[in-house]
Amino acid sequence: MPTYSEIFFDEMCKVRLLEPEVSEQTNELKNECQEFVNKIFKFQTIVNDVIKTVDEIAAEVEKEKVKAIGSRNLLKSMAKQRESQHQQLRALIGEKQVQYEQYSLHYNSLLKLEKEQRDFIDQFLLKK
Image 1 (tube, rainbow, N blue to C red):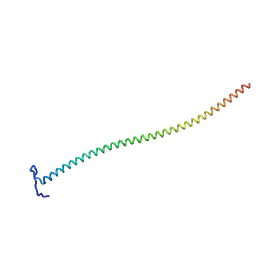
Image 2: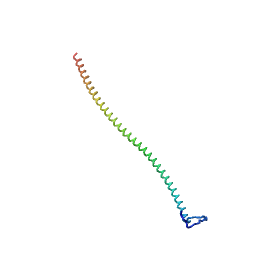
Image 3: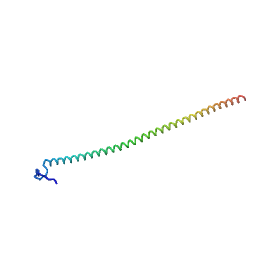
Image 4: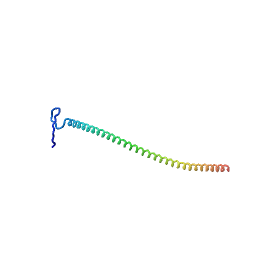
């Protein structure tokens, strides 16, 4: 147990074991510590709010990122689909050109046959 060699009295004539100046400094330190703790608590509250806001923004950014990736994939898919349709149309055009050439040859052969038959009919009618 500590031993005290001096006893002090404050302004209100209360008995004190500490010097009034040391007691006052101790009280000031206590008050400053309480202010510091209050400031740290406020700082922690602000930091938590900032972290919460950043997390919300990060979640929103992630949603937009997923949307952008989905849109990009859809665009690539549409481009591939368009290329596929383009190739199908080219193939169809090729088929139609071949069909046109066949019809054209057939038409020309029919014209030739018609001419031969008319010539034959004309010769036949002239011989009579």
